[in-house]
Image 1 (tube, rainbow, N blue to C red):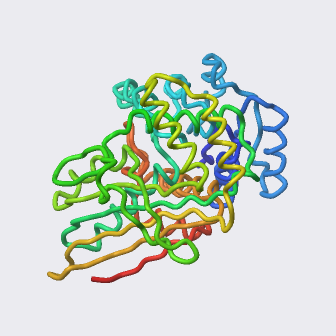
Image 2 (image 1 turned 90 degrees about the vertical axis):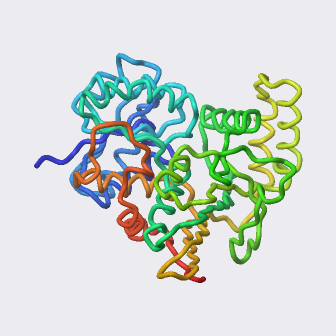
Length: 382
């Protein structure tokens, strides 16, 4: 059987290149690294070919805004992987993959606009027998995987909450202007229009600024200790109560960035969207990025921590699952690579549009994360 060919749009970027390295290390697939800068694409491919045998990577120039070029480049590809900061073009990229007869996966922010564009293609995806996977990465991507796997250790899963700690060395990271703009815009949108992110009392609801229980503290261990966290909407969390009917409480929470961003920038954004809900706040977006780069301090690490409670063997049971790594881009790429290993084996290649966290086999994915250098740690209790 011929090796599969994956085209990675944004293949020389932070997440795209991390994914390319993992795919070449753990599979026999061949890669096309695509982006707007041909020299960077070719240089990245040359570096990979120097590290891995078989000359399995090549670079091409491709602009996500050019629909005709997309369809031409995607023809002959087994899968198109969108790892670029071009969420506004998600619909056209997915449509081009569909026309070219390719499968699709994206590693992008889980925006309402992106999901709406993909859902509009759902009938055509199913009719064409293509496998389209969205919301790949570690958040979105891992929280529902963690809960699905933990649920197997309970007779009844009553509560499952996940806290995240992102201590990133923003100053040493290199982003395109498009990536920075998209990141700032997404945070502003979430502040302006918070979505129902807490499941309690058999319903999803928005967080209340006046409820301390809506902003719990998670203990992330030394040297970070207990941190207050705020709920964040993730699409993959919303069908969990249907999967586990005994579930009484679940949510995904994020801790703050640093004192300046949390104490100055976010209050300004909240005041701004209250006064002018449809404003774009580009200046505050730039202040946000500056604050991240200027005030984020070591030690650096990225942590997802699940706290789950329920019953096992007729007794109360408690489980903690902690997934962590210092490199946020490796932690983003590794779950996607683990998903694609299952795809390459054919186990999860099913027609339709899927959230990555709902499609994969959870135990196998966590096992592969460990092989890829991600720390996966369990703690039991009652």
